[in-house]
Length: 144
Image (tube, rainbow, N blue to C red; front, side, top):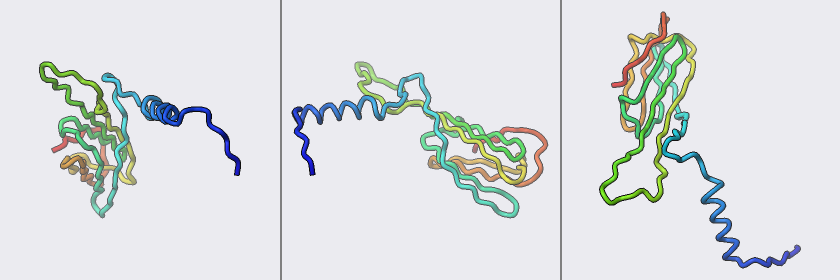
């Protein structure tokens, strides 16, 4: 085993490493105007007549979710906004909660009937009940 002498003060090295990890390594675009794009995790369950799709979308309001159906192709888009409410005399020192945009597109084995399908959002989980059938044109699904 070889020992290499260290000439730096241990606390200085520790401080330098802390600054590196705090400022550069984990930095992502957290500016106010930048939206972080996320691809939500999903589960797909198939029955004889429909597909049930569940997507994790925490903090997203129902009216912010857009579900588009085009034949076998399903697109889900949503945007989560940060709370900009400040009281008089307060100022933001540090902010990690930013605008996040959720987007996911996937194709299913069979075409989907938009008129027989439904969508609901509860406790941060979007549940799509997508009825199997031939679709004639692209359409948008309303989230309840």
